[in-house]
Image (tube, rainbow, N blue to C red; front, top):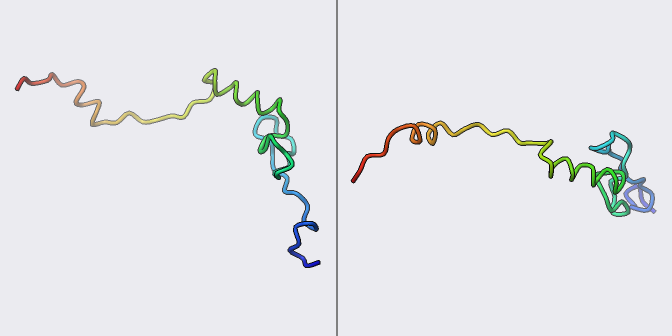
Length: 73
């Protein structure tokens, strides 16, 4: 065995985004990066109910065009 042999490496552990607990980040954890199905569903529900939003700046060009009256051709 070598030092890079996958059998000798322990699985990587990350912080669960939902509960903050440890979560195994490996193929053996089907809910990764979450620690459990409960945390995965909790996060999905938060997105579905729009508790999480990605802020976007209004495009100043579109805003200016929308406020100006259209000229006929």
